[in-house]
Length: 347
Image (cartoon, rainbow, N blue to C red; front, top):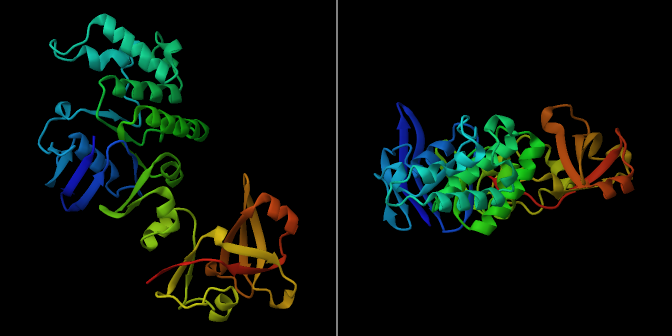
């Protein structure tokens, strides 16, 4: 089912939570709503679900106006951050709940319900826990049961509000890949809210970046990372070095290759992996010094300090593969040359 949001606005008193949102989500996409706390992500999700009413604008699902329809008539599954499982019900009964409360005319038989619930529990790889209770499960298991329960009623759209936010980092990482694989298998149009950029980039096929109730950019994870639409997106998605031409030493920037050729705009954003580092052969004139580094698995993030400066603006971050770092044999205090391969320019 495709989703079209047309001119959606929502205010809470004097606070503008959403400001003229226009968004189209094709059928079968897995979309992340990404942005800082208070940017309107969850409010937008709740308006799509029918849990919240917009002050203006329309919600269309596959071309049908659902703006004023009740939640139960929208064919939407909703998964919350804190599972919302019924503690007094077994895993089996939690997943069966949505099927059992259907009107008698559309309610499946007990045999059909049993078959479907076990199939869903197998899909989320937890059928062996069907007779357990939520308190006997881990956080990751409870979240998968919550997802199975949402899928039981065969929703046309699946909405997930910070689905992994309450889980440990390692469990979160496992469930991200699991959700992506599950989506490929089911192909249900899905939207999930997150403030975790890594989660959005890893799981979603499309990312919508929100800020102060407005859409800053929409696109594939690679398009948003490689071609940020503005300075906010560049700062929010991944790490970036910011060079203001009015505040930085122009000779230093030119030596690093940043001022050639001159671009429109006076503020340059440079990704750490776009800075090439070499040990300096002319230590007296070297543009930077190695202050420290962090191991990020296969990558090393270097913290450099521009020579002759102690201000916070003097710190530059660069990244390189672990193998390359070992080859260079860099130590703290080493003088280095650097070249900037690419920058994004903003006013």
